[in-house]
Length: 392
Image 1: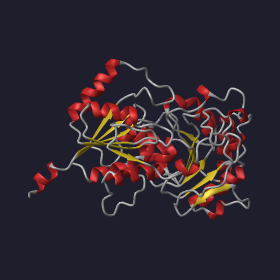
Image 2: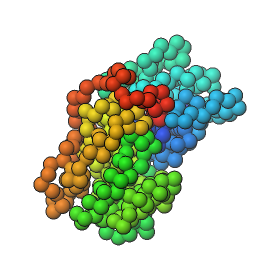
Image 3: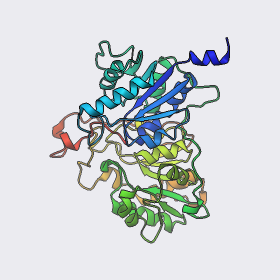
Image 4: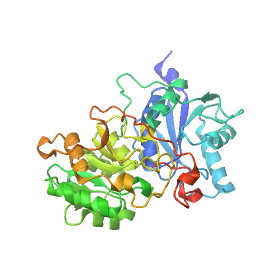
């Protein structure tokens, strides 16, 4: 049998990941496994994840759909948008599909549309009874990291990473960005996050930048165009402000050139991991660290894992003063940056209250009490205050 005929028999596969950029980046290892066993690999993303999807190795085509069951501000349900998606999926002639979702989401709305579009075999993790919507109903391992859970599903569906692929996050080579950062080593501080509970307050971030600068680090502050006021305040006179100066590929280039990145649990932290840069992760416990910590790179988690907001998926901190992150001391930040950047001269005598390993393994779990009762949260911390879809 010729190679051409063999390749024609290899399936056309669709991978669905409808959340934000960080979620799409975490799907990267699973996408590469799918691509290794497919003649054509398409990725269906939400609008916020499309740019990240175009950076994933193995992706031949990126499709975009603003799903009304996903995101912090879901799109309305319309027949027109659904018909456009159905036409696109039908024209794609996909043989198989993997629907990737976070542990708290359902794949079934997407699976229904895929079935109606004629996709023959659909695989997903699902706690809900899928009826005829899934051909492979897979159960994820408890507390599994999101990147590993997606890869587990791909393997269960018959897709394996190619030889030599270590399963870490990866993106296509980013552009050079020395014209943005200037010469010489630097540390990146990314102060923003789509979910405010996952980031320092602006004043706390500004103090950390000042402390890093005083310790001898050259600091670069990054952020989206909509965050330019934030990055200007955080950078002040102590750092280079690149707020609004980068698209996602150029941000990847800036992160790739950094000695370390200081960021909350947000997309740029996963982008830093994808370009191999160590991460000082300011990790608010509103979601579990074992599922969302930086994957595959040396990292340290800073923050209080036992805070009252633990496991609430709160979008805004329910505790006055945001103590789980704003309570991190400058000495902890400096010691973590020194440890990850390999700069013993800058290390301080204070030990960081950090969790994680320099070896690049997943962050160590720490026991935490589960806050299951709503009456243990601050008043008003319900409904619209809690994440329902997007996770980074």
